[in-house]
Image (cartoon, rainbow, N blue to C red; front, top):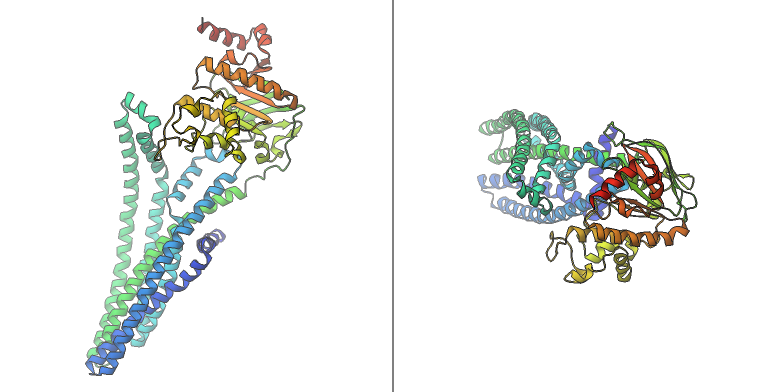
Length: 590
């Protein structure tokens, strides 16, 4: 019940937080407009009674009243529509901003590994939660309309006050139909996500080459259609059941509707009611019918909105109940370095450890290289050092302070990184690099210097408008660049921070040739040597042994454990796994 109350409060509060004045005015104008429309039926009764009694004066006043009522109702309706549209846009924008804030509030990446998180976001994104305020306003207006209509019906005969009660089955069965529909929508969330994935594969340039080379277009379309068909059938079955339930509800109301009109008509034939009363009864009964229909639609809308609000609250709760981040400040200069003590890690939702019992010391000022086969845990180590995840067991310390106790945002401000799965920011080229140090995104000399450190000085010369060129073909005027150029831009981004405490390079040159990579790492090594006096650590993950031989410390990772550590010469002399892998790779170049 408490969660339901929170969901209802969210639906009301969202509009007032987005547009307080417009929301307040909307809640007033909607019922006011409906109430004015309700009394149009009373004017029609007076017109009919005036005509039948030849009372021209009464007819005239009734016509004037009807005209004024209709005109004012139209004006309020038009203004109300504009206000609702503005409120809808503002509320939707407020909620979207809030959702983006919440998704970014979690400092780690664990939630991104959870399918239920993505399913809920999928439902929340397509729910149009911002529209719920219109349903709330419409519901308030419908209730006001029903109360006034029932009061007018009671003036014709007291028993007519029960007419709205015949709409209760429609409302209840309509709610049940909405539950069936909502359950179906939840059941097909994964289908829609897979369908969207296949759709993206079919239209995105990154996948277009392989789809054509391997003749996958038809297979992707088939899978896309199969997912949509399965989802559509599930939703359709729920829709058919809901339609039968609603039909039963409308039959129940039709009985009451026919009975109400029949009662007024019989009383008129007995001389107990006027022809105007008959007109009033028919009009009001019709309005009750329309109001009940509106209430059913509003209730379904509100139930859908409440469910969407529940998804939103789930996201809020996940953020609010997450363990609080550490509050300690990171050191400005490393003295001892970073230590991993008995570190094990298993990704959320899996059972097999990626890392197990890792003990490792990354000395302050060292150039460290991580080497090993694919999938042995090198990138996972980088993620743990970035604070994206916490170890399943063991701990990581920075100059003796547990990394979990250091504020993650403050820690990452002291890092810089280039990842193998780098992001393609479709910004201006200058911004694509400059976001590596957001405070200097407009500092062109700083961007030029970062590109120079990344060995990417030539990029500005080959782009049509230099660093002011829009990258990517998603938007007009944008151009695409090669994989190697995207990677060099990502490397430039990693070098925007002049003196990071730790520089992590995770396969940062996979799209570059060996010669270019060797030249880059030679410059990196020189830069790292210059920063060593400040205790800065440079961590390189690479498969190319020729580029890591100059590292101060080489760490060989195998099957989630540290197989051996040492310098290039020490490891060769030891004749272990490193020597074997180095010899194999060197022989390929002979």
